Length: 79
Image (tube, rainbow, N blue to C red):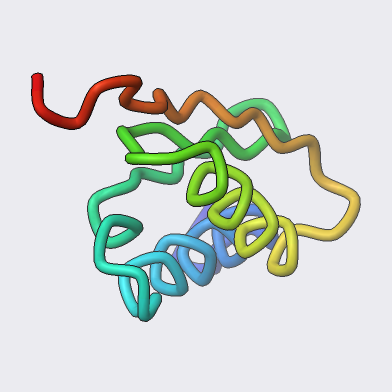
């Protein structure tokens, strides 16, 4: 495969960096993985809003790619 990254790997790296640089601190700890042409987001979020926000941010870097949103939403942040 050589030193050149595939386009999905480049997209994956940019999507991970976008989450890490997000003004929403809790997105900094989310993880982006790629496998078989799809992008998977995982980790924990305090709300469904943040889960969806992360998905749309990643989608902006991966138009046309299958996005698997495996982020768990904490029902009770005090636990």
